[in-house]
Amino acid sequence: MWNSSKVHVHLGLEKPIRILHLTDIHIVLANDDESDAHKAFAAWRQPVFDVSGSTPAQLLEEALDYGKSFDCTVITGDVVDNVSQGNFDEMRRIFKDRDFMFCIGNHEYLQVERHQVRTHECIAAKEEMWDELQSIFKHDIGFDSRIVGGVNLITVDNALLAWTKDIYEKFQAEVAKGYPILVFSHAPVECCTERYRGHLQRYGYTEEEIELSFKITEYLGNEPMIKGFFAGHCHMYKDAPFHGKPNYWAGALFNRELTEITID
Image 1 (tube, rainbow, N blue to C red):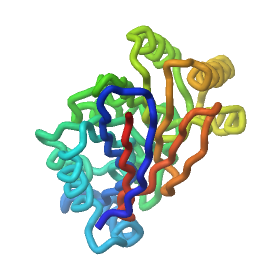
Image 2: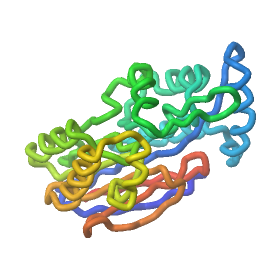
Image 3: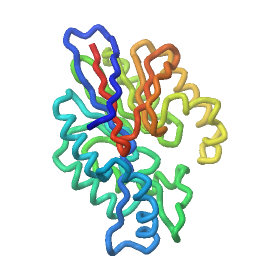
Image 4: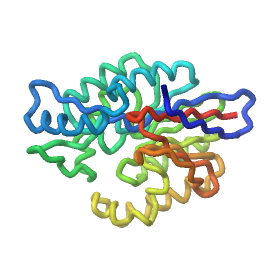
């Protein structure tokens, strides 16, 4: 049923643990009372993601049920394709009473206006939707951590390809706990490097914030307690070490792709 990528990370644990990594589901719904623009957008985008014989929402529910046999399930964003009441209602329905970790993706705050996708890749657009998105989830969608079997799993927002001062301080506090860390984010860690400076400038970051973000990327790559990285965003599986550390991109769930991680 699943196109499953198997990943093994060796950390020297006494007992192995298993993590299910899901990403890029892209539910596309619009309620009857929403705007014509939302309905038209949903009608246009649904065929893009309804490609597996099941809807993205059905796949997400099935994958979350599958995740019950794992020690933790982590979702790295783009659960929905755009901002709509239909999409947000569906997230609330599916996630109610579920246990998982989550970080935001860029499509969680993509907005529809006049039959067009409004430019969503900017700080203001994310800030505009943040409180409503946060209300759907039990834990912090910007930065969360959980110790599972002696490993510190961290979910962190980098949907705009940048880290912030607040995130830097939180990483340092997690490192001080003394557990090996695996980082889960929406965009791959290599997207938070000099190569993407132009993107960050367009998104509205200052030069000081951009330089700090690059500094944080180097910190993450060089910090001994941070053992590996997992991300989505690219809709493809890839094994691409970063600073010599394990670094994996997960395939998109709308294609029935998921990643099963064994840590020992």
